[in-house]
Length: 307
Image (cartoon, rainbow, N blue to C red; front, top):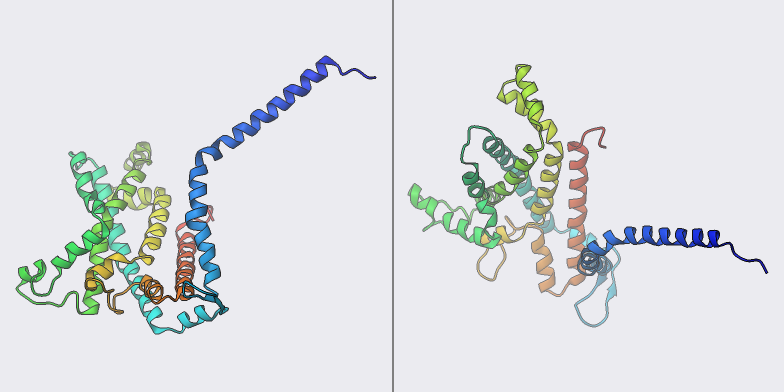
């Protein structure tokens, strides 16, 4: 009978211990993010996959489900209201993004410069609209744009139908989005400005670049990642818009008219009518639009090397 060498046995146990130690170190990060992973699977991924399956059926919420194939999607793609409401959210996105992002960036540059002394005073003031809940902000703007007793019409001495004329009502939603979201992206851009080295800006000054040239040729290129994040996330949030247009344009208990309604109104209406398969199809069509818009933005905003 062959005896095992004590040295070999000790070496084997040490190797096993090292493997266990490496495995434990590899598992520790996953233990910390386990609550997020579990909640993500239970509250997002699971329901999303269930909605995907449900979108191929006709289901009233009780009884059996009837296989419909792509009929739910086909019905939505041939429904004029769907395209009208999709046009609305795309309008909200295009109309508010550029002025809002420009204003947020210029405010961040101004507050970050030496021209502003009391930076601690201006930061919370600019960010304050973001703290206001979306419904509360929409109610505030509803009083501001009211036809007879609105603040704006009272100051102008007119009765402009800001919220009943659909073209004007959509611009009221745009103004609300700009007012409420500028502060958030101001903070994001302000954080991005702090990552730019002072030495780079001083070198640009030595080379003779004025303030505008430093912003265009130094600051903006170095903040590309901040711009990519801002434009992509803002597009996702805007395309999923729901509360603001409905509070501004709707009456208590009702949704906004089609002329200013977002796409999510179709989802809510189908759920109310117990057409859960159709509602799931609306949600997944909106997801496809959001994914496509995000991919296009990544391709445009990211540099060639990053792509």
